[in-house]
Amino acid sequence: MTIASRLFTTFFAALLTLVVAGCGTTGSSLPTLDARGTVTLDGVPVEDATVVFSPAETGGRAATARTDATGVFTLSTLRPNDGALAGRYQVMIHKVTTTGGMTPEEYEKNYDALTAGTMKMPEEVTKNQLPEVYRSLETTPLVAEVKSGQANEFAFDLATGK
View 1 (spheres, one colour):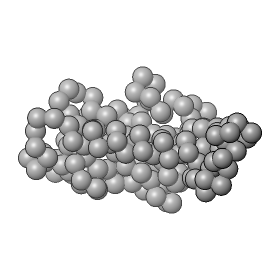
View 2 (cartoon, helix red, strand yellow):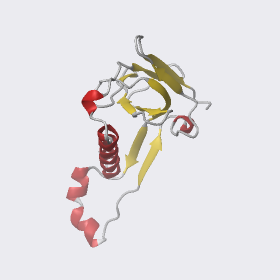
View 3 (cartoon, helix red, strand yellow):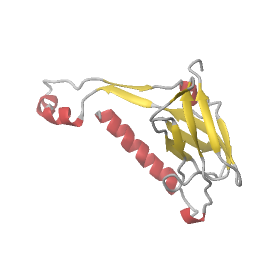
């Protein structure tokens, strides 16, 4: 794992903690509903994509998930896999990969040369593997509604032409 990957993962974990922690209402009083689904790109399952359900109305809470090898995800709001609150959501999906850079082991091995300036850190390239339109609230066409008393299963087949 490169340094940029570690920083991104740490930042995302901190952000998720803040979103889950929220403010005001205690977690035990929020009625989450089972919510799950699949993500495909042109019909092919997408592994390791991040799925974010962002509330369309004020007062809601975001729910997040990560897809498995078959593109399946289960949303988490307060605790892992606890689902989402009832309501309408805009859905963002992205899959970020980083190439280049150094692994922590390579960095450790080359630390003296890097700090002495006799070696330059290899450039890291971060890329979203999915069409950019699905990554932002301003551009995503994806919406979902989590409802009480019914199966909340969502299928998002993303298209490369977007």
